[in-house]
Length: 194
Image (tube, rainbow, N blue to C red; front, side):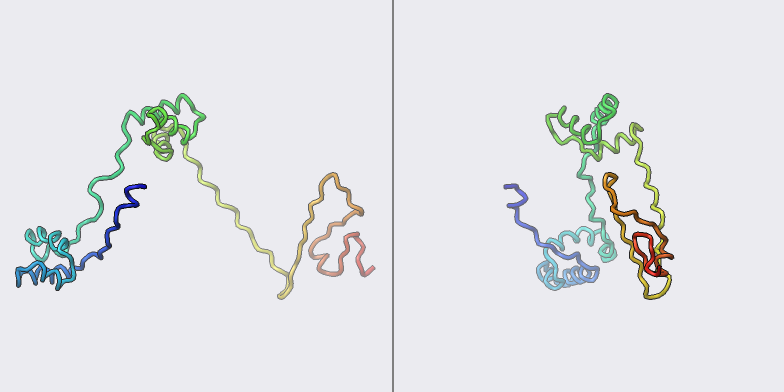
């Protein structure tokens, strides 16, 4: 069982508003009681101690500026230059190898450690000029709708595919939609008006 599955979930706390932070420290300045100030502002003690250094440094104006919550350091380390060189060397030796094959070969050389993935291999090879990016697909031509000649009319077109080896029992005659719309049409080529 993984450590993540057994670790208890932390409760989510909404970010505090400027008014809550101002009330928190106004109450604290009046009472010098952290518990009372937190209770009145409806925040936890952790929030008080999170904002306390900023309040001390800049007063109420510092409470209005929300700092970025983004991590200060990236969690994904950059690919080592030695790995980049291995990717390029492998692709030059095996030009027909795809991104996944290159990534698997590099992993295999490193005792199957997850040192690189196919997406990063693609980025490296594109930057090195060893592969060309896929050309953008041409837009499909616009298909125009065919409407019936008059309102409340429909046109049915039945298509039949006959294998080359199959012989029709009688010869079929082709006709245009305009001819078929004028009168009764029979596949034998004789109109019913005849």
